[in-house]
Image 1: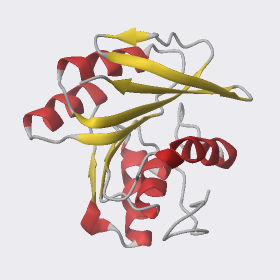
Image 2 (image 1 turned 45 degrees about the vertical axis):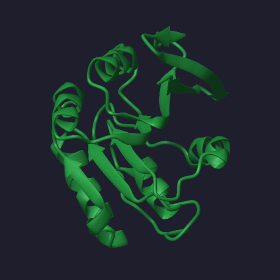
Image 3 (image 1 turned 180 degrees about the vertical axis):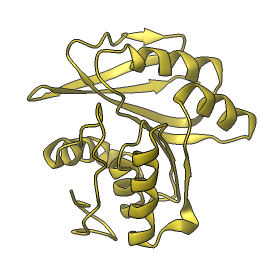
Image 4 (image 1 turned 30 degrees about the vertical axis):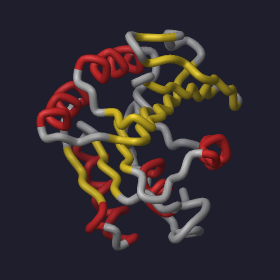
Length: 185
């Protein structure tokens, strides 16, 4: 795996060897960031939920995000994310938490975190995208200029809308789907 563009372009990052963790393919990552090109990443605050290796959040940092927070409950993923952050020397603008998404969203809200971009790449077939979106409705951690990007399987149930969070676009890349949401403030 590698960083595609920006400050760390071409730098390799490790991937944890963990069950239920699949790397975001470079072509999918590139497509996500091409769609995001109209969003200004400069100064953005990013959450990488179900982070795995942290590749999406690190790509955002490479492209100018001011802050990235990584959440993963798996100890190997947690260690890999920390290793990748250290290898890119971006510890000053990143934080990593080893916890489940439910606890993380509550804690982030309680501590006043607000994000412009949220990446979700949860294990497939567990209804986790919908559960995470519901939790974000309950504990508002979204800035007024937010976008939520969910990588999922076609078999995952992805809602058109939840509370004020609305589906903007879904794209298909092989067996992978990427859905873009925005919360209307």
